[in-house]
Length: 272
Image 1 (spheres, one colour):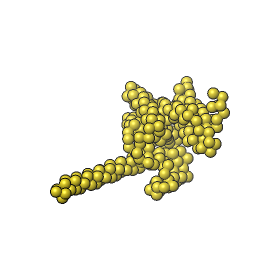
Image 2 (cartoon, one colour):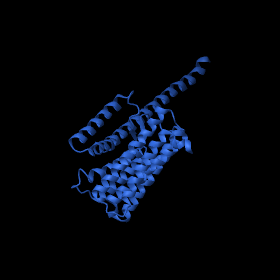
Image 3 (cartoon, rainbow, N blue to C red):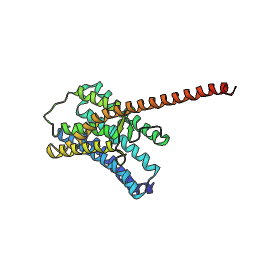
Image 4 (cartoon, rainbow, N blue to C red):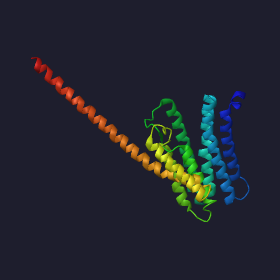
């Protein structure tokens, strides 16, 4: 076990868990949940996501991949993008809905768990066919969207009130997108895909503009909102196009098969 503690990529995964758990301690503490505390908890979860993204890059740089690190990363994702966002959004708004708020928070956490389990299975069986896309909304983006919403509403938009029922609907929709099969771009094919490069450039420019002109939290606010809406529309377009292409190929194969069948029927008569 000591060698796993000494593995550099695991340090960043551990840092992600630390940020997420620290945020949870702020939410379940005995003190009052002021906007400043909610914004601090949201910021910690965001930093946890940043550390989570860095562990894979550190593993590639140091060539220290391990199956232990893969499993540890999956657990960290569940804590940072499943449990922590659910508790945060419940403590901020969903608690006002009573039992419905509890149900929505639990629904989100369960969907995050199922999403991560499906990802682990697909990583082994390679059943997903859309290159450059993830199957459903990733838990990282789902949790980041909810956390950013809480951060922005308790900092930059502190004077704006969002009805708890609307928050519940957004949380439930984001949870559904995680377990759906709608393809969302993961931008892993930037070098070979011109469309992905253009979309990434638009997202990056929008995030920078929001952070500079409005507020630092709007870097994630605009980025998360834009990715959620534009990614959903783009995923539907990609799925429809892929289905039409598959049907066209199927029809071509059927047409070719029909021609070969006719030739087979004609040839015996020709021989006679």
